[in-house]
Structure formats: C-alpha cells, structure tokens
Amino acid sequence: MLDYDGTLASFRVDRFTARPFVGVRNFLNLIQSQNKTRMVVVTGRPPREIQPLLALETPVEVWGLHGAERLFPDGHSELEQAPPAARAKLDELTALLKQDAMGGLFESKRNAVVMHWRGVSPHAAREVEAHTRELFEPAALVEGLQLLEFERGLELRTGRDKGGAVEAVLKEMKVSETSPFPAAYLGDDLTDEAAFRAINAAAGPHLSALVRRKVRETAADVWLKPPQELRTFLEQWIEAAEGV
Image (tube, rainbow, N blue to C red; front, side, top):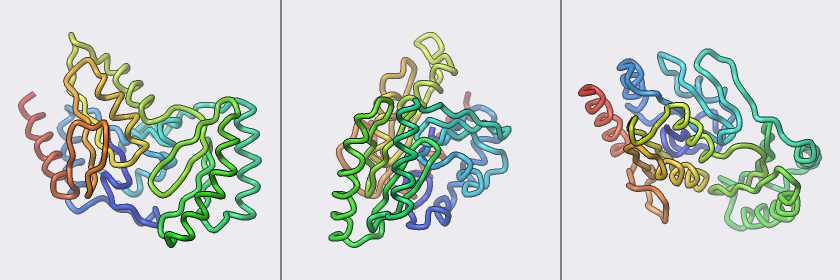
C-alpha cells in the first residue's frame, strides 16, 4: 500500500504535474506483472487523478480522499456517504471559500473542503492557516466531520481515513497469524500516521515505512529517503516475491 504525493512522486504546487520519481513506474509495472502482490494506492487525492499520473500498464486499485472513495481497477468506484449535517456544513464552506480563499489555495472534494498554503510565503502562510482554523475548527464539531492536518494545509472532511483504508484492505486479505500475507505501507505525510498505526497492528508480517527526504517523529518502522531508497525497496520487494 502506497501513498502518492511525497512518496511515489515529489510534491508540486500544481498537483497535476507530480509524476513518479524516475524508475519508480518501471518497478511498479514489474510488481504488477508478477501477479503475486495486491498493490493499492492510498491518497488524499480524488482517486481518478492517480491513474493518468502513474500511467501503469495495468490500472491500479486506489483508495482516494484518504480512504473515503475506493476506485477499482475496472473503473467503478464506491464513495462513503456523508451524514446530512456534515454535508450541509461542507456545502456552506465550499460556497464561502469559492468566493474568498483567504490567500490560500482552496480545493473542494466530494467529502471535504481543503485549504493549502504550499508555495505561499511564510508570513502569508501563517495568516492563511490562522483564518482557516477560525473557520474549520468550529465546523469540526459538527457530527461526522473531522479536522485533518497535513503539511502546509488543513482539511475538514468526513469518511474513512488512511488507517481505515489499511484496515479494510487487510480484512479483505484475511491477514491473520494463520494466513500471514506480508503487508507494507509506505507514506510521507502526517495523514499517513493513521495508516502506519494500522499496518503496525496487523497480525501477519508487516512493515511501515516513512518515505521522506528528512526524517521526523513517526510511528513508522523504518525511514526510506527517496528516490534511491524507495527504488531499492521496490526492487527488493520484487526479488522477494520471485521466491514465493
């Protein structure tokens, strides 16, 4: 299970230009061609943004919106439905922020409102964050809504998080002490911490990996510095799968 931005690709202010690190696409294609690994991308993005960026030979399963929307390889999707009060509050904030994004970059998702300040000057970023918290923190008290912090942004959202997505995948795989499928989660952001904790609780062999140029406090088992150590990990996964 793999996060996308910051893990498989560098962050970009224009997220539609965030392509995988050199060599990563080839390794992912090899993993898929082995037919021995269930590969899943778990991302905060709307899931349909991933396929064009990854451009793999075979479509990949994507749990988008931090796990709230699941896109199957055949193209159909499932979205968790928001409670009515949460939906109403998100619609209200969407209308407000479309008129005035307070100097930040506003993003509307099917289950969330998001404010980014990546690429904004430090002084302006502090102002955007303060104004966003004034709006989002009271709204997070509405039933069904939660405030999600990530690097250089805040998201007010409803639905499953990345930890819930990991738990759902492991449950489908029937991972247990008697069926010990090895499972790994690679991510970089604060939003991936829930996924690290979920994979760390798996009954079978498991690994959580922080993929990031600079290490930080984390629940992950290991730190991989991209892109070289990420490529090494994927290459070693392929070699290990060959022996299964």
